[in-house]
Length: 332
Ligand SMILES: [Zn+2]
Image (cartoon, rainbow, N blue to C red):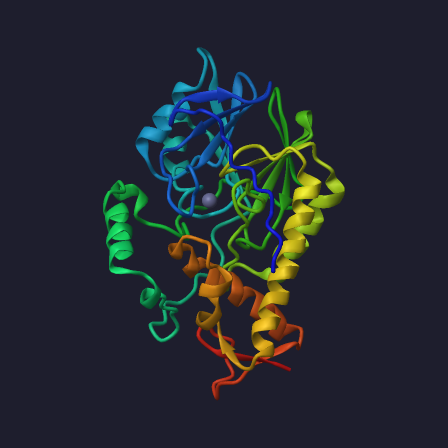
């Protein structure tokens, strides 16, 4: 049985849209886009004083942009917008932010490969979801503002400035270094704030849950390497885009690495019982989770299996031999 990770979920009392000074250099405004995928919503950070940098503007909600701008003191302006990655709850608002402020945007680049929609290659957990749950999920979705209904990749965003691993950007009161951390998404960057020895960890290391790694853009091999990459950097604190600060990040990242190793063991355990399809064991593996998360969880299990196929530990049993989401896998 997998050990449970001690997650950080306590954001304390907060009001959506209100700015809070969380460290001398960092303010945070939480966007009202809570879903089973975003926890309490997107935490947008404002960094520095005077000429301010924003980390992850958020989903395309005009009201969130108003809240970000209201966080500024008289005489302050937003000059830089850093984007950790191109998912719909992180990058889309950059466009309106640039229009309203003239800020320059920074990111790794546009979104990577998008999974082709193959109706033959979808998992279906509806048999496990009761009518009452279906109705509740549908209602929650219908109640979302239109701007929040599009989830997943933001294929429209492209930064003004493309950052590579190790690039440094200076503001008058802050220094940000980009750290390329592919895995959750191939263009994921974490941003180190040198003055506070802290890291904006985006969705690579989140406070409230582990990251989803969805192929083809997400890669388990890269995700594990990107976790290990953070360990020697020894930051004092992480500020994830979802959830509160992570006070002991090295131990926490180690627990994530361990958790993934355990998940892989678990998958091996299922396959030891004979050939399996992902959808056959995800409900058991993720029994305690919201069933809506089973779909992205199936993606993470797929990422594990792709990695196991690449390293010659598992193979596809079907005639087509393609390591698809719906393929049958067996141990080698
Ligand atoms: Zn996110």
